[in-house]
Length: 405
Image 1 (tube, rainbow, N blue to C red):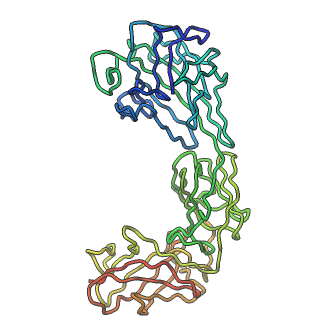
Image 2 (spheres, one colour):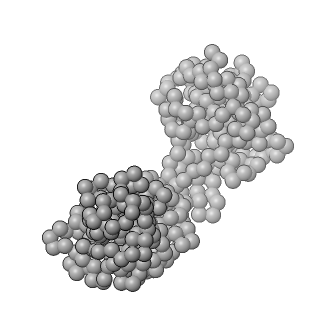
């Protein structure tokens, strides 16, 4: 990234120009950035030489950064250019020109493509690319706004040359916004059981999808039945829209809908390469937290932990997904009912440290989507932590720890 004072044609004004650089520049930082629009936000780069080359990994969506640049000399120019460098390039891929804002803190001056030369950086001269858009494969970055304001407007004193600290000299303040578009991409083997992260899932189970650019924002479902779209993201499995629990750039939680393939993520019209997942009749997965601990409630409804074990001969409840077909069907995306109860059609058993335990009940948890519970009797074990495994229709779950007190 580079900001340079110029004339109205984008030409650099010789040795008196203001030069603020964060790319291919051997000295300490001369530009300091804050993510977002808050002037008192945290500065994302520090004062060391290594911080000069600010790396800004950007996910799909809109990103705004606030710029603090200490005035390097007494010269004043009426226009400033912004050069943005991507993927370690030594030439700018975006170059914008805007008037110096000297009138109002609310004034957003128009900006356009910088038509002039950009300064040599480290011996690598480059002409203005003549565009506000950078494209690389399916990724597209567009500069949607840029302003640079005189130090008298915002009266900020947060940095000095090469350091993020006050020095009683007000700095110029700018902002720029870029919009990133890219096709979502599922990781290899990135569609898994939502509890165990195993490769097998069952109809109606909760699943997790992992990848990049899977959403433009982080959104969780707030109503039932579950929506088929969240924040512009949708998922189809075998051509059927899947109910969504949660979406973010790197992970989606959803409910299995349809056959095994293909699994496709769509974000604001951009479609991923199809993925796949193995759907079998039953695929129990125990939800976990911490160090492979099973999500289990003790008889008093407290959470089973290493410090809060289940009493011998009491009944504890383990929570899973992947029950498979049930005797009282539940619509996709809808919560299970308490009357009638939905029980798996297949046999469900459980062991603790390899010893069979009594299963008092196995079925879908009322008022929840895709959640299965197994109520089991705690055997007469000595105090300690033991491995719980649940089996449904011959398919074993992941092993997770339960503590007996």
